[in-house]
Length: 252
Image 1 (cartoon, one colour):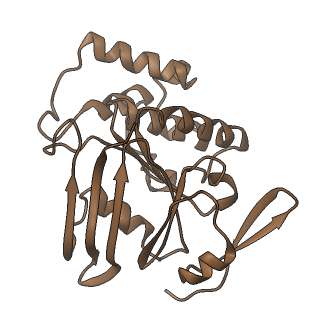
Image 2 (image 1 turned 135 degrees about the horizontal axis):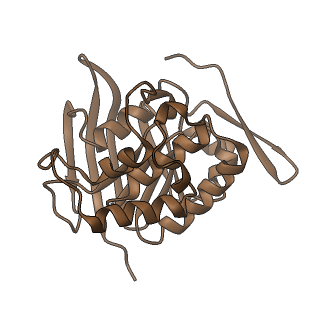
Image 3 (image 1 turned 120 degrees about the horizontal axis):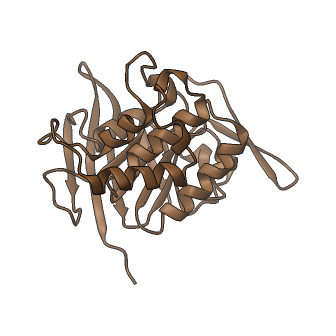
């Protein structure tokens, strides 16, 4: 069965304060895509994500959304980097997850019993039900990721975006996380930003290399020669069957 297109960027350029960070980007995203986004620091990975999330407005080009739920509130779940989260904010684990059911039109809504039961069920599945009343400032990195993953998927998005999800988490949860994502990919498209090609290549279906421009590779297997041709300064090193990655020196 052919997957439907849910999002398209066409000749998009975007950045901040007049400076272009990503340029002339064209990319199509379909139902059940699982795209790994790689590239050096400062190359535009986060800018690409913020553009898709409509947190910044492109300087040029067009983004089209074809979600089944409609265009007014694009059903996109987002898991930010843990180090961007304010741990001092006075909010509990349960309230963070519940906030994933809010939208711009209903920021003061009261949650129904059914919604609260859904949150409890999801937290139990993620094994954080026992810390539901705990302030987020007291959580470990792995617990924090579980909480915000719950928040990202509680509204059943059609697209889930994760920004460096394996940063600041314990090794055990890192492997669990990708197994969870593999299961979630059965019902939603996923974009995951990572420096760790060796880990994500085992799970993603395709790879996009970002270095100002975006080069889309329709496979989860990518060679050093292809990275070089994409002008993506990442070097692949393999020891036996276990791939490793290191970033070469780069400007910008």
